[in-house]
Length: 137
Image 1 (cartoon, rainbow, N blue to C red):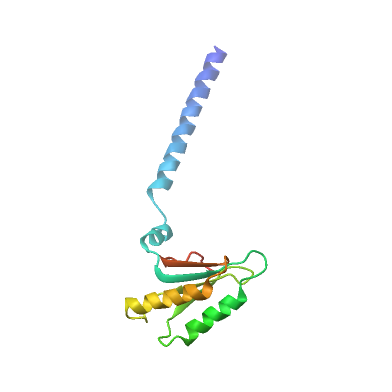
Image 2: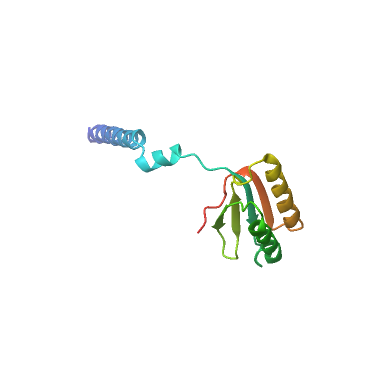
């Protein structure tokens, strides 16, 4: 008789605890936080050109970076860009909209020249029509 009473008490206790866990899970899943809702509605910005200078322990290629920045700064149409510093050894992304370059021909010429300047280094990545991958420090 004691065993039967003990078994019935154990079964009813486990049923009550399972029901409480299910109700708690339902309340947390049904109401997403407002911060997450705003983040999912905001679409990421796509840039026409992204030039990323990387490092493998000895810094980024400074000569290539200097030549690249000289070309960009001396360009007659002065394309604007966003600089994203993301590493400890000078790792940087340069994200260009290229809105200042009105024609597609000007954009293609700019892209070709940037690729020519940055060739020969495995520490430089060039991406087109993509998001800035790094968020910065």
